[in-house]
Length: 120
Length: 107
Image (cartoon, rainbow over all chains, first blue to last red):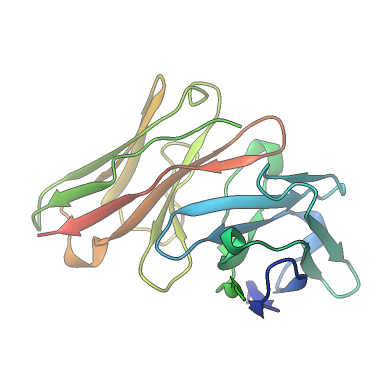
């Protein structure tokens, strides 16, 4: 079965760090464009970051310089390292797959999400 | 990156047609996609590339494009269609963008 399972969320103080994981099954993470998308409580979807199959990475301006996306091919897992966390980073974080890259640009598989709460 | 604008809400009676418009300056050059999200659940794609319906999605969902707008149409609306809907596109600079979201209420 093709699926994504996120983990690593929790309660963290402002200024702290957290690493989210997204374990994939049924497909190869490194052959796809993989993104993180977040949703603050009661708000809309916000794209956060992507890692291309070739390894290039891109970030939303709101997280640039603080978040780092990466993957471990041996574990078929996607990561999001979040540093200098702020209250406005509080959200459910989803990982999602774009199977077609530039020729597609959409997300066909989503994880169930992991909640990150930044609060003192 | 650019913005995609949607109406905050659309209300429709069962059996009627709901239309959700998404506007963005880059839409003439980029595909748009649509997602349905129900409370507490991850989004699910209902339309890809302006008008293609993914496998398993009801034929009641259709999409169209014209200039700087794309439209999601839900025909014969059912109670189960009550959800939030988001348009989404990607640019050539490596980034993706979501629309502001529309809450569809079935009266």
